[in-house]
Length: 119
Image (cartoon, rainbow, N blue to C red):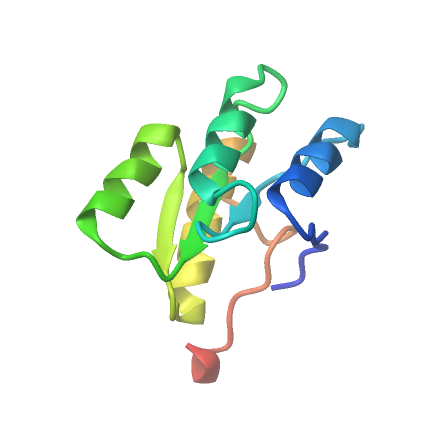
């Protein structure tokens, strides 16, 4: 989609990257199933820090029960996507959280539209 991404090998590493970033991140993607700290705890940690509480968190996971979705909402995730996810659903969720975060409807500078054949 034309965005620059950083990858963290664990939730702890993701939190370190967030804390060390001088510019912050526009969005964080988190899986639920991770070693040491699950995606729910990671989301809660991100949202409890004043400097990151407005950073959108999209949970992208295979955990699809209504309980899992409710748990994601309770910890403050901004969107919850279950694998496998289509490119169009991914793009829609990302566009929604970025519109809210950036306060603009024109995301052309941020995202390229997904190709129809890939959706």
